[in-house]
Image 1 (spheres, rainbow, N blue to C red):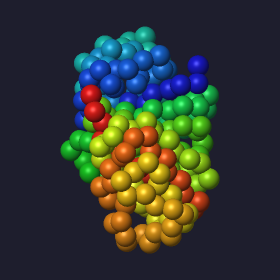
Image 2 (tube, helix red, strand yellow):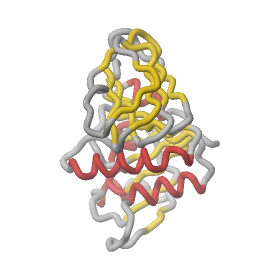
Image 3 (cartoon, rainbow, N blue to C red):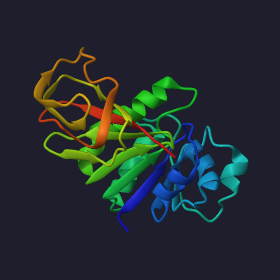
Length: 211
């Protein structure tokens, strides 16, 4: 089994689309991300964390699930450790759930940064909360997303980009250089399936989801 899902603590919309996305995957829950397991109808294969934010009753509901305990004072987040463990366990396709919303904007930023930085460790790493799909862009790879016509999407950057190409959009681009400060790639619109490529830089594409 090489398809995994990682549960983080951000808000989700646990509808049919998210339940379908997680079906059949091995599941790792990072600390308070465990709260999503019941809503999604899954039992984790592993629970990771220092357990400072998960509700004790939620943790007690899974007495037979192995735990990877972490100290509270550490140099990486519970999510980073869980992602690394997923890679060590053979994950090739990794879905990250609960990375985008919640009360802490810094957590969402950190999760996006983690995903973009670690995406090249997997054949596919993607984020989904039931409302939005996020795909880190890996230089030299083509992102293909089966977007529906009219679906809104943006390319958001952590750096300047080289060789940015967007196909299948209302505003296509062909092998351009894009400065870090440019908002040119905000709020595009799919004409159908979309392809995005970069040759250098750090960025992600974010698509609205339609239940």
